[in-house]
Image (tube, rainbow, N blue to C red; front, top):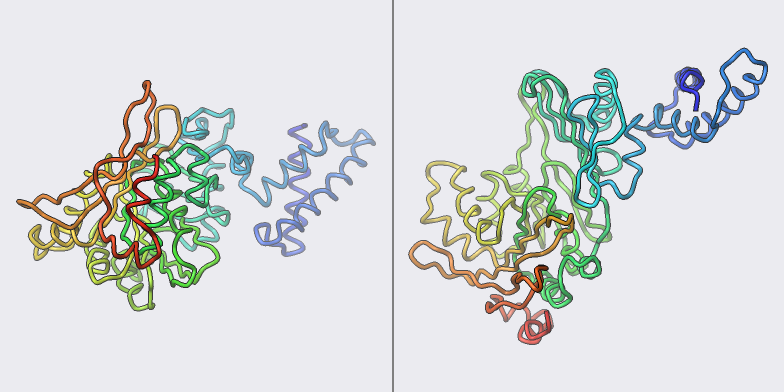
Length: 414
């Protein structure tokens, strides 16, 4: 593919796009057809020997479409179904994650390329990036999540992360097929969600928390109205009575910000049958606990290194809500509001696995919440294996009302 020829074709296409008042994002198919026409015309003109010849017409079409209607050199990585995340440390260092492992690509950008790409990515989000707001979180039209940090928060270059959320599973049975959990664990978790238990999904960055939450959502009865609350839209609950809410950045004047706490409160006014919080990070945890404690079923995710640490963290985060919130109030509230904690981890081999399912029966002794291991991980020949633990799930009556035999579920081979 001739770089010079591709640049000429790209300039011609951009000029035609401007003349015809096309929106490259909204009219992507129209732009593609236009590119094909321009490339065919250019190829004929190049036969006269005045213009540099095209060595690969399909590659030229792809390159120009990516440049005009896509995200330039990054588009090939965005289109690759195996790539989970893309990040730019500096223009000459573009990395991708594939199968849970990172690799340096051969993609080379300029500083101007990075700035232009970020500007285009933010164009449809309504979010901004400047010296007064050097961080931004936004969702791309494809559903991927964009995070950018700029100097002087970063040392010199813009730091860009694009998390794609490669959909490999939409139900727990898919996770079983991928080896992320056992069939017995999947059946138990599906029954727990269908029965209205409150579930906290814990894990580290890129452990698969959002994917697991999406899979668990498939067990929510279709008659229920679900309200989701997120910082940036990531959850994909399809085919139900679902309303998604996301936060909003403040304006240039510093007004108009909508926080997670505000969204949780607003969600309760929308007649929810179930509340789902994408990720609990700060004081919104207090509002979530109060909602769950009132009898509203819900689910959420939290960053934690184990299921037990997730419980401890949920006992700490609400204290950020104000000095009048004390541990004497929070600890018993967590014990009564959370029923199950599912810990998922990214293993050294790049695979994501459920490592533990912890039950919270609701009892507190000496300020410590009692827990029981429903499923835990043991090493079998050096390989981790999820097995049935000694604990049992709380609220057996809820399982019974939903038509499940809890004892039979937990007797199943893990």
